[in-house]
Amino acid sequence: EGDVERCIYTAKNMQVVEYRFPANKVFPEHKHDDHEQIGCLISGKMGFKVGGVEKIILPGDYYHAPIGVIHNAWTLEEPSVLLDFFSPPRDDLK
Image (cartoon, rainbow, N blue to C red; front, top):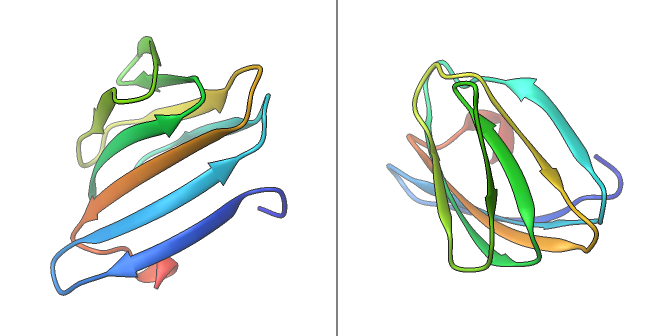
């Protein structure tokens, strides 16, 4: 997405993606049929909905989106930096 910056680090069995999101960005609901996802917020403030449960995370907080579970996210009033970890690595992000 044009206003999202990312850096991708891929190893054999895992992948880390550093995202830089603008303020007030909404990401559509989706799921990963083959990838587990864990994220850690580095800066900013974001909302996440995973499996129908919403929560706001702050820097240092984590979230988990298990394989096959619908989830989405949104930034709030400031830009955010997020680290997402995927296992196994996503082919579409290499």
